[in-house]
Length: 206
Image (cartoon, rainbow, N blue to C red; front, side, top):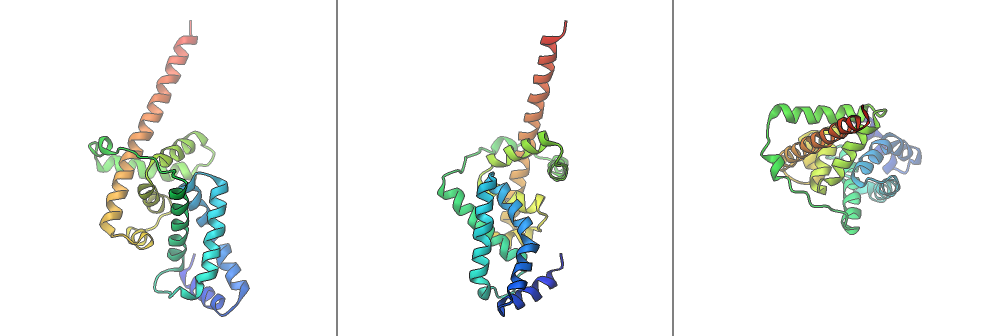
C-alpha cells in the first residue's frame, strides 16, 4: 500500500470528493477491523469499533494535518475507540507477568514473535489460533495493543509510539513483557494439552 496514494486521496476527500473517501475506507477497513478484533475479542464489538473509527475519520478529516501517515492516524483513532470500550465495559483482566520476566532469552523472544505470525498466517490451524487469541485476551490492554500492532500488524516501534503517544522505550518495554508472557502462556497451554492427550491414550490402551 503506497502512502503517497493515501495523501492524494486524503486531499481529494478534504475537497469533498466522496469517491476518494470511499476509496480510503476500502483501503484500510480490513486492517482496522482485524486490529479491533484482536483487541476486543468479539466480531460484533470489532464491527462497532470499525464503524465508529471511520465516523471519526469522516468528521475530523479536515483536522488531519498530514504530518504523519494516514494509516497511523487511523490506527490511533481505532485504538482509542477500542480501549475506550474495553475500559467502559471493565473487561481489563490483571495479569502478573513477573514469573515470565524472569525467564528471559532473545531466542525465546524470536520464537514467540515468529510463532504468532505463523499462527495468524495459517488460519486453518484453529487450535493454535484459538490458543493465541486466548492468551492475547489475558494481557492487559496496554500490552495487548503494543504486541498486536508491533508483532502482528507489522508497525515499527516508532509508529507504535506515535499511535499510542508514548515513548519508543515504553513500546519496547511493553513489547518485551508481552512476548515473554505469551511465550510462557502458550508453552504451558500446549504442554498441558500434550500431557492430557498422553494420559487419555494411557487410559484407553490395554
